[in-house]
Figure (cartoon, rainbow, N blue to C red):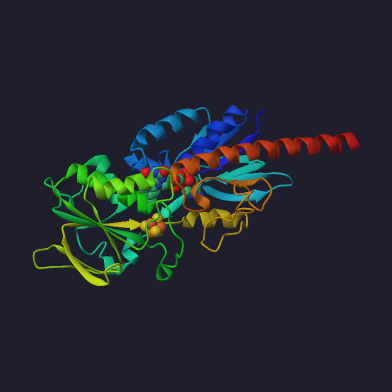
Amino acid sequence: MKENILIIGGGIAGLEAASQLLKLGYNPIIVERSGRLGGHVADWNRLFPDMTPAEEVVSRLVAGASEANIFLNTEISFINRLKDSYNVMLSNGVSIITKIMLFATGFSLFDASKKEEYGYGVYNQVMTNSDLERWFNTGHDCRITEEGPSAMGFVHCVGSRDEKARNSQCSKVCCITAVKQAIEMKQKFPDAMIYCFYMDLRMFGKKFEDFYISAQRDYGIRFIRGRVSEVSENIEGKLVVKAEDTLSGRPVKVTLDLLVLMSGIVCDHQTCRTAGMLSLPLDSDGFLKSRDNIADITASPKEGIFYAGACTGPKTVPETLAEARSAALEIHNHIISLSEELNSNSEGQ
Ligand SMILES: Cc1cc2nc3c(=O)[nH]c(=O)nc-3n(C[C@H](O)[C@H](O)[C@H](O)COP(=O)(O)OP(=O)(O)OC[C@H]3O[C@@H](n4cnc5c(N)ncnc54)[C@H](O)[C@@H]3O)c2cc1C
Ligand code: SF4
């Protein structure tokens, strides 16, 4: 009989791992709490750095995992440790016996309304990076009119690199996402004046720097180094954004029709709850803690528990997919070593 492998989370990490495990001859079982597969990527429109349609990536991954057992709208109710396996009870009443569990539970987006000074949920023209992706996908959002904004801004590091927000880490993907979204807005509304307010620009990936240079050179997007200190509304209902330009040392005040907050990547609270059922340790940033951060990034400190994707920290799509493949191989090696152990024990008897 094929070995069961329980995958918690049907985002791109869970799907890619399931696809690889199917090829290796196992029986992956995906448990996804929402009603659809693809996780956050299913909400995005086009992906940096090549503007690949997110839908294409998700459809390919869903097709690769189609032979797996998939439970949608399902959560883990509780986990019982047996002698050499786990009995996992799902919220739909199904019970699964497995020796291996893969956490592919991803991340949550920082709740931008917690940063009151930016006015999310207070002023109508303030939205998040995720809201803007949804608008790219659907074309529906009352904050963006048909003629588009004449001036708009992006605020970097919202809920990241911010001790007050209890997240001192960099979310890694939001600088390049801001550049991508600013270019997309300029393509749609060429006359719009676009500003990016940043602390540092972290263009770490392949082609990211080219993207940033193109945003300035080809699209005239203005990058202002400085933290936004205040957002308010004037009597015409426009947003007034104040910041300090730390390069020129001068205060900056701009009037905008739209402000996009680059909400950061934070750990998912439900992941913490599920990890708690197995007493799995969390790292200082709240994400799941790997056995180590160099050689064993997909292994948990507990035998038979593995991790892939953004449940251990911010990742890009290619990084997430690479980790999912790596986790599948680690699981395969672990199962081989379990059966070798079993064989040598039975020969010794
Ligand atoms: C605004 C924004 C734009 C981005 N754009 C890009 C881009 O253009 N290019 C790029 O390379 N990267 C991009 N990223 C990064 C990309 O979103 C991540 O790399 C990717 O989502 C990580 O996938 P994942 O499967 O690890 O996690 P997720 O996408 O978070 O998926 C996790 C899945 O697990 C499910 N889940 C969670 N907990 C449980 C549970 N307890 N039980 C059952 N199911 C559970 C969730 O419902 C979800 O379906 C962007 C990120 C942000 C914030
Ligand atoms: S990627 Fe950029 S915007 Fe995001 S937290 Fe890091 S520095 Fe800030």
